Amino acid sequence: MRIHHVGIAVRSLEAAVPIFEKLLGHGPESEELVEDQKVRVASFEAGESRIELLEATAPDSPIARFIEKRGQGLHHLTLEVPDLAKALAELESSDIKLIDRKPRMGAGRESIAFLHPSSTSGVLIELVESK
Image 1: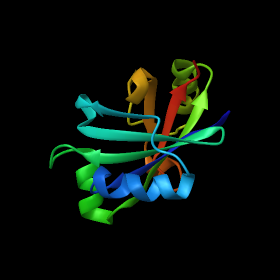
Image 2 (image 1 turned 30 degrees about the vertical axis):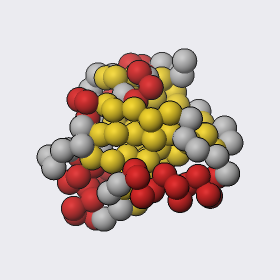
Image 3 (image 1 turned 120 degrees about the vertical axis):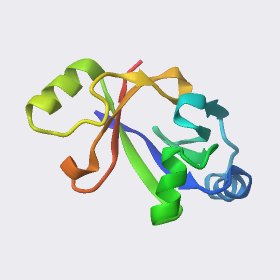
């Protein structure tokens, strides 16, 4: 298992991308719209992991609600697992509360699922299946 990426909620990609370009020394490798999650994503390579900047595209999106409640900042930590369906089944049987009981499509067309922060010491954890 490894840290796949860290998701950071931002009000504006236009404002945040130049900051991370300066910090990391390069621009984002990709930018995309994930319509079903109502989010625009700018992804930066950072060593063996990535940093994803997340901008809401609608006031009712999870990112918009997060920023309204907590402000900009760390939104989630993503861990890579070899078999997402198996990991979800094992975690659920261990009384970890799941947000997603089944994998769904995330940024980069990767198979993802979220764990509820109430079961993970207050941290929103996303799992992504290894390619």
